[in-house]
Image: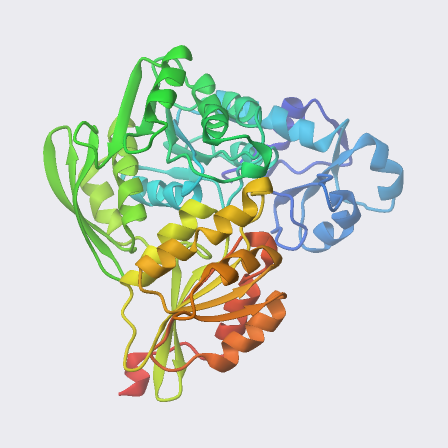
Length: 476
């Protein structure tokens, strides 16, 4: 059996106390009692909203082969007959396991941060590295104080590459996480107005992102966006952290990994990438200039970790947008179909502009319309009204004539848009969802975007539930 961890190594790494007859090993680690599989260990982490110990019995019922629990919770779990490893604190024990996982690995490691595009870029890099060997990467957006150590603890000992996403919304969050990951390559996608409520300005955000340089392995490389205003600041921060290999990407003439030209439509893109002075035509199976720009960083990372570049470029042609981050659905309606662009996972001013540009590039059919279904951008603090109001400019410049809005902060955008734009505003997401479902027509292109906490995934789900997936073969 190819164990992720033997129980002996697992117990030793965490400094835990075994109870019962432990299995020889485990095949995986889960913190979700609903999705755990047979042969996996359940780590009962106490989070901000729920305590994993309350779901230990469900994890066992769903096939957990052992559970890792806090010593203080043991009396309440006495009726469970499953083997246990008892620790002082489960999250701290997971951190210890993460350090051992990193120490035993010979993989080439890449860590990615940035205000926008982390998860999509992580998925793009994971995809591009597959032809070169065994790749381990974070699932979803596991990029915080529990997601990063969990991803490390799940890393098989024999993988060739590791891709990690590291996020933050306060200073000093990236620093301890990147020191766990110890990447060979550290990438910052961009600096933009995200989490502004916790920072005074963009330079403070850049300084927090620059913490990623502090965990680089000796001789490691940084990849920076050459097109942003904070490039010089980040370059200086990398140098101060002792990074001697600093590489750049973007459209700038001096970028090491340069986007020389771009052609895109609503479905995919073709880019001309200049890497080490050589120009290559690269097809990308996802639309958007922002995707193409980050693809330059991905190809640069592939170069730096010694990947098969031909394989990486070919893999990008098969790329598909990530759920909630540009995923497309063709839904049958009447005698035709509509196109749904799901951008409902997250939003900040920069990603809103990118999504609006993506909508502008999409072509409605027949009498269809381009419709921006927009919800609040959270964590904008005192800047919130201003950044919501400022979305009017990109919408008008893109020629978007239909803006359907919800959320307390979207009042500012509603009031900023002229009468020439068809604006419908609802305070609650559920009310907007009902309006969207009854108002779409064949040929429409509907782009749904908001911060995750606003719950615009419900609008996406309502459209998918009410209109069947469209197939050309069924219609002809």
